[in-house]
Image (tube, rainbow, N blue to C red; front, top):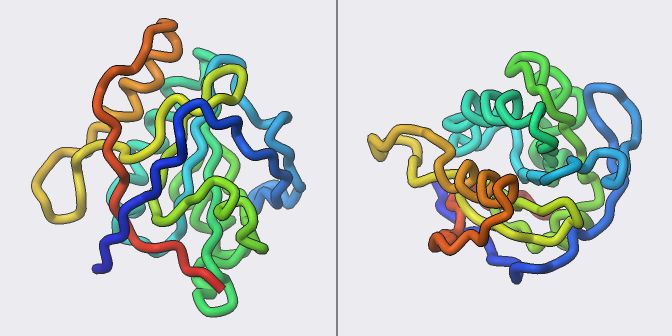
Length: 184
């Protein structure tokens, strides 16, 4: 299992705008339509990565927990679907349904969005405030497949709670670790 660290986009960066295909609805959805009123979590994930599979249940639980608080979760897969067909749009739609994703699962076919966010691995997390300014980037928590640490979502939970409570996140932000994005 390859381990790639996420890049750490500078805090305060404005969320790069995008409009991508939502594989579940079949519609192209723009970021301004998707963003949350209080916060937006953008996650770069994919279907087959063992690091993503490891955290899928908590992603669903967290999205449901925060949706009534003005927080919106958005999942994006930027993997090369030609060389990794299990990460293609039809498979993404099926994967989203099987995992009961309560968030859109967008396909970044050109990989331009991943490049704009400087995404490097799956999973990779970005938390933006109401103005779409970056307040957190990095790991979900310290759990990895096989390390015996429970999946809690602690780091992203803390970042979201800071946004919702309008307090500064002074906790160390650690890069995520996962499979590299499969570039074309």
